Length: 211
Image 1 (tube, rainbow, N blue to C red):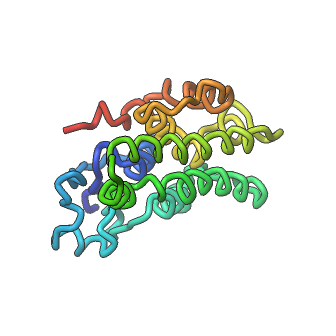
Image 2 (cartoon, rainbow, N blue to C red; image 1 turned 90 degrees about the horizontal axis):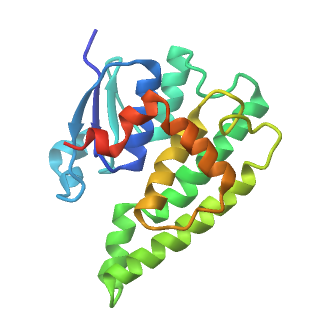
């Protein structure tokens, strides 16, 4: 069987999600750092792996996969992991929650967008910080309201952590990093704390994997 390799970056939210999923499976993998600050993701070597010039890229089962949620769903389908519920309504809700972060908050706060914002702004750092606080703050407040649902349990959906939780924890990390006030988001904080106490999540934390 070929070695599983994850091309990632320690602070990448998308990579963080996939690390959690792999850890939840107990899947051994070899991490290979792609330094986003050094723009290694735009190297010809990495573009051969992913023409979008993004991380993560997961080499597993003889294939190279991109896009964190597509990777997580592949792992779920091939390993019967339970990252999404078995019923269509449950799967829809978990996707809804995951997409609210991965497709709404994350893209406007990605490194490429922020680099362009800073290039155009007269005070780059102030513009960056205000942007992060605005979009992460608004997005997380909406996520808190989405959690006001009977199917929310110990975790985002029910009592087993899944794909929505894999997205939530990295976004809470980003909120704290950018000094976003999430102190009033009770469900977000309670669920995130439960996740962070699990070894699969703790082992994936950026501070644990920074190399």
